Image (tube, rainbow, N blue to C red):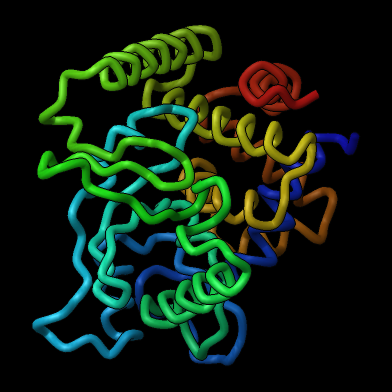
Length: 286
């Protein structure tokens, strides 16, 4: 198995240097033809992009049904943030991972939600031709869902997950999700106390730890390009570093070490604590 620590710092420095140069939000960015991502795109911006890509008339547009803060799958700390849309092109409902669409790489002159949506449609078409008519095989990225009666509860065809408004349900899944949230907050409080960092930093560290742990488990010790892209937004927010700074540090060992020190300082600990305690204990990085 490769060193997970080296893979983590590859995601932090190398991958960010390589990928963030072509990243942007739902719009803006540079004007040079190349690969782009939209790491800050919202569910609504993505759906707006779908309508543009599909040339949808105003009377037959796709729209968001449940936001990421309304689906019970999003409440599970081991799951991505999911939203549900009505997909007018196929006249069906779909659940989509926000982290997944933010990790999609597409080619254009700048970062934009329409280019992202066009690439999503291409991926979807390839899946359909491959026989996966209801989304990716396990429903890890996106999937077709069916409404159960007229309850506002949607069930994933591939994953079996229920996507429902957690504000209106009192079922066992929601109670389990709330229990996980409590455990998450408790762990963040412990991290805050143990490493003498603020609670916001602790929440970010624990959240990122769960995501990296999930990605490592899924990849059997490897962090794929998609996995790295999925955590770039969280890493950038956590580190507070610009792309130019990261790019410069990624090619110089001394500057890289200095950046690790700066990041440790930002989260309120030492470089040795970051490498020797926080990474092994929170990220299972040895």
